[in-house]
Image (cartoon, rainbow, N blue to C red; front, side, top):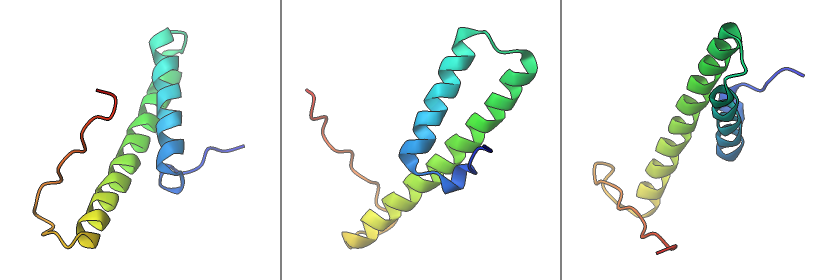
Amino acid sequence: MAAKKPENLSFEEAMAELEGIVQAMEQGSLTLEQSLKQFERGVQLANASNDKLSSAEQKVSILMGNDPETPVTPMPNQLD
C-alpha cells in the first residue's frame, strides 16, 4: 500500500509516522538511500503538520475575536 500524502494525514497520524521515522533513523540500520528517503518523508510530514498547526491557531484566533497578529498565549502545563 502506498503511503498517504502528508497533507491527507491527520496531525496525529503525521506525528506518529514522523516519530517512527526518527526512531528508525536513530537505530542506524537503514542504508544511506533509505535514510535519505525517510528524511525527505519526514520533512514533508513536518511541513504538513506545521501548516495544520498554523491553520488551527488562526481558527482559534478568529473564534476568540483576537487580532490575528496577537501572539498566541501558551496554555499552562497541566503536569506541573
